Image (tube, rainbow, N blue to C red):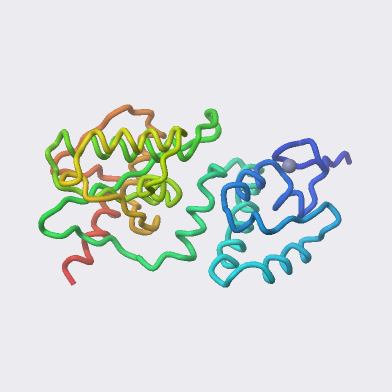
Length: 247
Ligand SMILES: [Zn+2]
């Protein structure tokens, strides 16, 4: 029997555990954007045990749990690809890991009486071409801002589960990448009395926005607006969110 030992992702190298979780391009895409990984620098003589020991030595407890979750997510993505299931975009994995490990918010919190909450999310599908996840998430925030202004839902707070992008929007450091330009765009759209801030929330509490983004992707629709109604396939998530309000 002819067995292909090459990596199912890059198809250029034999697939070892270290290749799959560290050296493969898909894994590298994750480690390059999660900054604590910069201190870990394995060479190709390392085993996965060496990698774990190094991480255990260098990382604090919180980062170590994110590190282990990322390894699991990278491996899970590899399995999803082999078995034809949905593969998460590499750049989204750090946010997924944060949502699973670091999040203390487990339920959707309603806004104060004097402001609105705009939950946003972007949907990605690697099978139909790759998109820059950070730019997609930043566009989702900008769309949220302009929709809230258009509908006069002011003042409002934006909530997104893309931590890296939210940090950019809140940062005073000016740079000239696309995410920074979209952030600058948002500050021109509305003033500080209209948009009260950009907050990071875990995926657990951004599920309605997440499901709507997935729905838009699957149904290939450009714009859909529901006023005082909820699409039936999302209503159970909306009910789960608001059920906490009544306790
Ligand atoms: Zn590979």
